[in-house]
Amino acid sequence: MAPLRELAGLEHGPQVVEVAAPPGGGRCLALADGRWRAALQRSRRDPARGFLYLPDGLPAHAERDWRVVAGDGEGPLRCRLVAGGWELDNGLLALRLVADGSAGGGDGLHPGPVAGVRGGDGSWHLRTWLDTRASTCRWRCVLEEDGPLRAVWRGRAELGGGRWYELEVTLDAGLPFARLAERGGGGRGDQVVWDFAGPDLPVRWLQTDAGPGHAAWRPHYGIDRRLARLAGWTQFSQLSDLADGFAAVLDDGTALGAVALAGGGWRGGRLNHLEAWVRRFAAGHPEARRGEPPEARADLLHPDAIAARGASGEAPHLCWEGWIGPGTARCWALAAAPAAALEPPGGA
Image 1 (cartoon, helix red, strand yellow):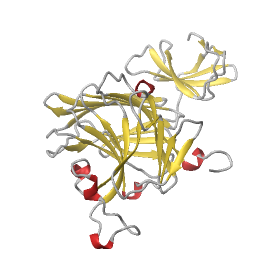
Image 2 (image 1 turned 180 degrees about the vertical axis):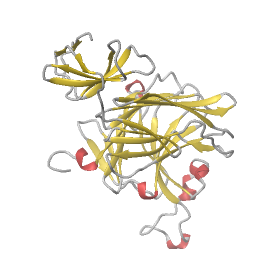
Image 3 (image 1 turned 60 degrees about the vertical axis):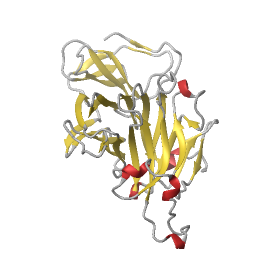
């Protein structure tokens, strides 16, 4: 292998990097450079390329001259088929992704790409769905890289009439986040929705501010309202109420967050950002999410309920919502961590 050099004068944390792979050998190789060890996974898409796992990162100005010491390296990332789709798990973050051929119904609400997210060995949370005007939806999915150091899943939802939505998920060994790259060719107003509800309803909301930390507050679930918009730097001058990262803290102490990596070109009218909303809609009727005025759903739960309004008929949700209309593109990280890890030293 050619030597790996750090030329920018920066220290890099643990990560997986793409490099040229040595000829011959198996799918995963064990490498060594003096006291340093690493593993390399050969790419399925291009066997001349590989994914090198640097468990200790790379110091500034460092140079590593790796040599193959064994033809059977290993890594912590596992990919397996489960009921309904693929499960990618690196021990820190796991995702359940929809299976090839999954189809939606005729009401415009269709299965989304992600059926569950888990941090570490905790519980599964979250679901996604597509809110469209399309009467049909069929997923075409492929696992392009299958670990043990990098997994890449790509899915495309065919929505009929030439409309579509694509998502590429990249999960690397040793990192508590996945990279999500989205592209949209759906109808105007169509959205992908990341839905927290029931036992997954967040008890705290964390949002990056202009300083080195974040603001934290308890969401109020009495009425529909926007919490934040997540956008890459290309859109900061066009949008208000922006954040480059936010997280939902769940009742079991898990924090699931989103961090902007790239917002796509603004180019006027292309809605490339991801919004976080408090929503209320009746069980089994998510189509009412945007189709009814907020005041029609302002039926607060105890202890703030107005007795004269009767029993509540709506349930609270916290939704991350992204447009998937023509020309939309987003790149962001989905991360999981114990909520305590996000507090500053000494506590809040």
